[in-house]
Length: 504
Ligand code: TXE
Figure 1: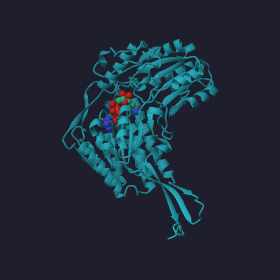
Figure 2: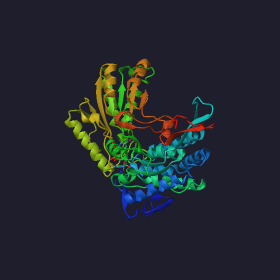
Figure 3: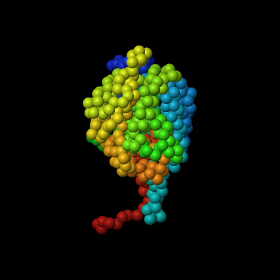
Figure 4: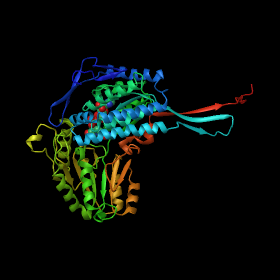
């Protein structure tokens, strides 16, 4: 960053081999937040080769599990020590508020703590009875090998931590590539890792870091026969490209590709029962989509409301949406920041134009803010479209911006059908005070996470991932570790005999 080398390959920091750099823009005011090295495909190939050599050397995967667990715990300690620095970088880079960035760093810490415990507790072995007392049969887990970890720009360090923590815990080696839009926190984090690695004498090449354009580096990272596993979080089109490329080498791929997440609200939220009532439902409907200006893969962008309360409910949410305080994430008064870039705002604006042309009713937002203090940033007002239906692209496609669409239903069956009528399937929310109905609906919804009378939460110990085109594979939880492991069945005959099948 800013003249210091930013690529970390085989345990050495270096500049890009062609001297290339990229300006990293602060989306709150359009200023240059930092200048970072931009890797070439050759640099990316070297990073993969370094990870391969380090894995094949065998020293890292032979490290005792307890030591790997202690390393993860140490990384968690250092994350807390450097929390303010990392959170500030995240805010400058993504535009999110400092309060959110601090929560992100706490969440990153929890991920490392969780995998420290899980890895340490994992016996790694299942004994199988094959019906012959002379045979010792066991199934063990081994690290999958060289991993390529590609992260997006909305939760740069958090998404990367969901990959690096289990990969390290499993004994893999890796090449990490953050989004070229938001590499700053990951660069700082790899410096932190280096400090922990020195304390634990981790061999060179276990973690390698390149940053730069995915389109330019993609092939070097995903078409290599030296790569055993690719974990990708990002857009659907990129996930499809990576999956196709990886297929040539039959490389395992796990992809998390976003969502178009329904938030179903039944009329009985008026009650005071378990549903938490009207205000909580409206508040979660608002926060579920406008937190981080909708740049969240699990954002509740489709509000599906029972017809009898729809007018009043939507009016209440819209009134609050219009009062959200936008501003620079470093200003404690800001409730939400800008979109991540000018290009992304242009995409969101195109979706708003589309919604209008498709005949949806714009009831709030639909424009840039007029406050001159926000003129240099890529801000966009919280926007709500009422009277939407499933034929509209704004209801089907991920806009990844502060756009809420409203659909209405009259029966439970209709609500379920609407909730499942998406090619995605990452997350969904259900609001009701009727717990029997709540249980029926959450079970009927085909989504990876379903919240009943809540919205947006996750925890390191529960799996995260999607049905349908939201992706395949899971992150977090025990499955998030298993993705980085191969299973090996060892059949040991302690009293060898000839098979005697062939007579001559
Ligand atoms: O994502 P990309 P973009 C969605 C959201 C957004 C859309 C596009 O709808 O509007 O995706 O965003 C790297 N080979 N999500 O264009 O391109 C890239 O450098 C290898 C959902 O920013 O998918 C970055 O590191 N890598 C999402 C990462 O892929 C490639 C979060 C993601 O970028 C590559 C963000 C290639 N050919 C956006 N091309 C979520 N699931 O949470 C790009 N990359």
